[in-house]
Image (tube, rainbow, N blue to C red; front, side, top):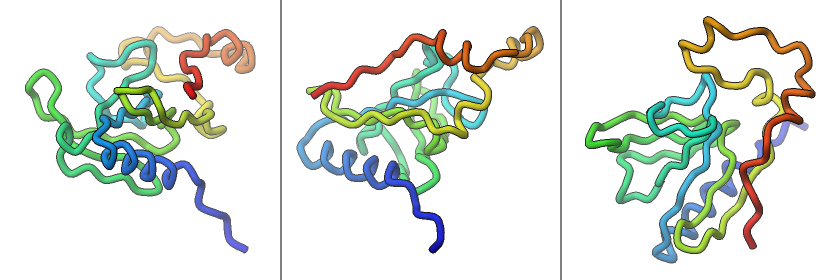
Amino acid sequence: MSELIPTKPYMLRALHEWCVGNNLTPHLIVEVNAQTRVPMAYVKDGEIVLNINYSATKDLHIDNDSVVFSARFGGVSQNIYVPMSAVRGIFARENGQGMFFEADPEQEEVPFLADDAKENAEPVENKEELIKSKKPVLKIVK
């Protein structure tokens, strides 16, 4: 039997549809890394929250591998690319209901470093210590 497609993209599409169907505003929590294409000026603590309502995006496409769309940031149109492995959650802005995902194993390879920080970066000797030292930034809302 071939490898199954992960459930995350299906859940993401379903919760996006649920938000839109209930006149709620879907927001995507993204862990920014070298593969994501988002406006860096809006990244905080390695994450960005994106409004993915149809009224805030153009050409929104959520497939099994990524979330792609165009949106305006500070009046400037930007193309956004978020690999599915970087998606940490989706929730409704109005009531906080949604779903949050655990980090993908392949995502934990290297933490994101801005281009200027890469030059001065020191190698990480103990990956487990680095992961344990990061404070959790998400909480489950019921």
